[in-house]
Image 1 (tube, rainbow, N blue to C red):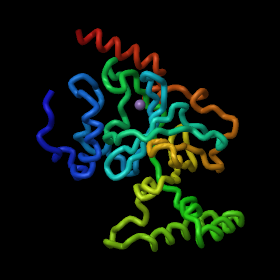
Image 2: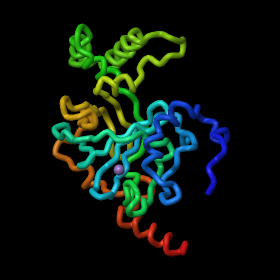
Image 3: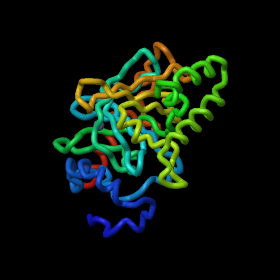
Length: 262
Ligand code: MN
């Protein structure tokens, strides 16, 4: 196998910042041994930022939450998996950025390699920042107004107002500068976001834990129409949204493929 000489065929993104962000991802892996993508291509042509949760049967079973941000997949390992019950606060350990192509990876990583075990695409879709909730939680003078408006049922107005507020707060270095950079929310340890998946929907939060080391975050479901108190989504919907397969079926298929190759 040969590495592509350049990224021009992909032509989707500048290699600079993403390539740098993926250095740790590449350092941990031997791409002559794992089928995981090396991260030399671009986006899988999604016009909206990818949201994916991969179920990963490694040394211990966990769920990897990934959100596309500035050319890479920001990633958290969630040992118990996401929950639609707002009462559940799930530990989410921030791990290295992954390449965009990883979002569709389903298969086996050889035993003895980093993350060795079976990977499933457990949920897939896109995500966006929850601008209304972010504005509300910014505190100070903006705190009271959106909350009152929300009680009064003015949801659309609140969102528009919050977006305008965030746009006004942006530093304005260029005419096309986005109103909101989610990396700023991550740096502040508090990202509110809406996911549009097949199993997970609605508004969520990733909140960095104070005084527990910077890698430890909590994943929470916001109390909204998509919340389902008392539910157990990982138990109810265990299989792949990409292929319908269980972890056992993916592992068995990989074994058959490996046997046929020898
Ligand atoms: Mn993992």
